Length: 241
Ligand SMILES: Nc1ncnc2c1ncn2[C@@H]1O[C@H](COP(=O)(O)OP(=O)(O)O)[C@@H](O)[C@H]1O
Ligand SMILES: [Mg+2]
Image (tube, rainbow, N blue to C red; front, side, top):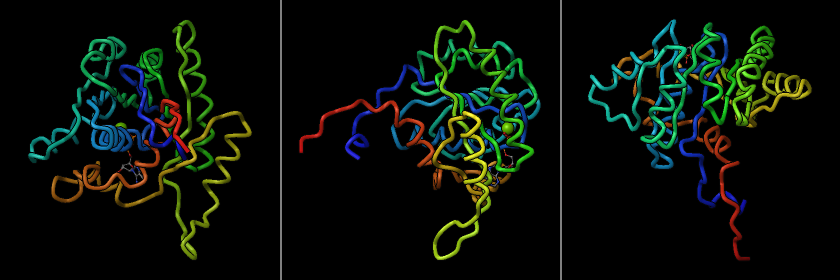
C-alpha cells in the first residue's frame, strides 16, 4: 500500500455528481457525508450544489445546521436549474471539490451537470427493482457526455445494503449478488458500500441535537468510499525500500 501515502493530485476543482434518476437512494445523505470527508480528511474547500428541483432536502438540512450553530466544514448552494453547469463553472475557482446532488426525476438537470463532472457516482440500493434502473441513468449520462470533450468516470455505489453479522462477518448476500450482476453487465462498482444503518438515516431526518449533525461526528463507511473515490488521483511516488 505504498500509494496510500502519496499526495492527492485532483483536478481543479474535482467535480463529483451524485446521481440517479430516482429519488430516495441516498444522494443527499451521501453529498453531506462526502463533503465532510473532503473537508475534514483532506482540508479542502468543498461546495455542495443542491440541484434537486423536487425536494430541497440538502438545503433545509444545511439551514438547520447553520441555525443550530453547527460548524459546517463546507458550503452549500441551492441551484435546481438546468443551468447548473453555469453554477459549477462560476464556482470552480473558489472550491477544490464541488459535489452536485443531481436530484431524481429531472433528467435535464442531471444531464446539464454531467459534462462538467469528473466523476459520476451512480447510487442505488441493492433492491433488484432499483438496480434495474441503473442502465437508464447510465444512458442519460452517456448522452450528456457526447461532445463534452472530457471523460466522466462512472461508478455504481450500492447503498442501504442489509447487514447480517455472523462471527463478525457480513453474511448477507445482497451486495455480492448485485455487484456481480452489475459487473457482468459492464458497470464499474465501488468495492466499498453503505450499509442500511440508522446512523445515516438519522442524519438528514434529524434536528440538530438529535442526529442532523452526524456527518461531522463520524464519517462511518463514507471514509472508505471517499478513499476509494480519490485513490485514482494519488500521484505515484517512489517510496524507498
Ligand atoms: N445507508 C443508509 N441506510 C439507511 N437509511 C439511509 C441510508 N442512506 C440514506 N438513508 C435514508 O433514506 C432516505 C433517502 O435518503 P436521501 O439521502 O434523502 O436520498 P435522495 O437524496 O436520493 O432522495 C432518508 O430518509 C435517509 O435518511
Ligand atoms: Mg435528495
